[in-house]
Length: 219
Figure 1 (cartoon, rainbow, N blue to C red):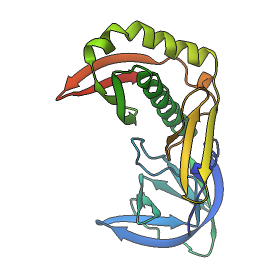
Figure 2: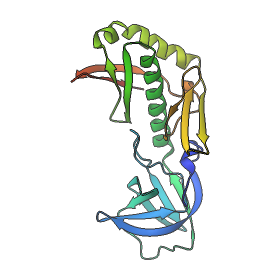
Figure 3: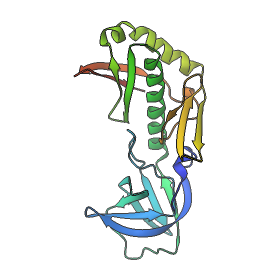
């Protein structure tokens, strides 16, 4: 069974592993590693980018997805000289990983603050670099009236540099992420250690479509 190291340490950017499977899925070639630090796209978060090295051979990972409890590392071509028995070095793009972690944690903070408004119920988060948002149900009129208050709460929490707690339940295999002072939520994404690492969170746009309110943000 694969070990998902990205769940244990957001700041693990290099790791030694082995290729345990070479395959093809929907005409796309992939590698499966014994242990991986590559985050697979899902849960509203983009996948990691990076490389797999075997000796001097450098293999670019173009996408990462999870399928049937396996993390598939998609590549353009499978080199003829690849060796299943030989150790590989995994190298992920550090800046890309940390940007995704900052965006994901920022989404949790925004959702926590929106949830503190009685008429709002966050239902979905999307933390892509090209457009991050939190979706909720509720009264958009009240939301608009509280924008200044929400922004102040974002700024204050980041200034206080609240810590991020991550816990796993061994019985259910569920993982929970909690921003200090707020309730824990189930999440399998990558997160920073404390809110000060995020920087400034700015609410860019609020859109209401068929009763769903989308609050877009950037960092």
